[in-house]
Image: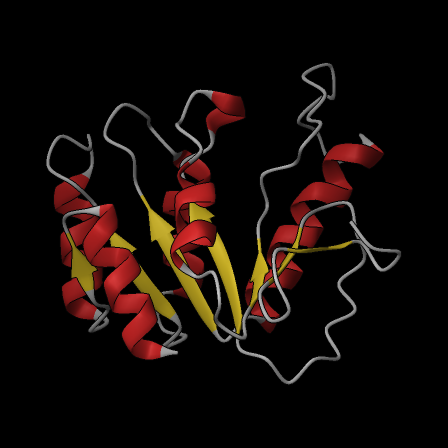
Length: 164
């Protein structure tokens, strides 16, 4: 990790994670990785996306912290929790693309909230495999707001590569 908080995978791809400041001065496309985390219950699908983007000139905004402290209260008065939530919302607002993955073994209530928040933004690319408990809701929202929806993580990576 360099002094700015960006992890440089190669000369073009950069990854920024909280709590690093969102100093987004680069002209590179910015991709936010929204979706299932559930305090580590979900697979680390974000790393698969990052690996698929190697060699591309992109800034990836990855909300999955390297050191999450489960003792933080998920309350607005907890400063660490507040910082995390604001980082994620700010990053999504500033992103050019929001990639969203709903892992079938999770509930992902925050991801569902974010789907609603950014449905009309024109930034979303969504993957909701069969088995996700609210797949029907996701399908209807994507249809209504003309959001690209795919079934697999590979399709999601291919769609993102097409878009950037």
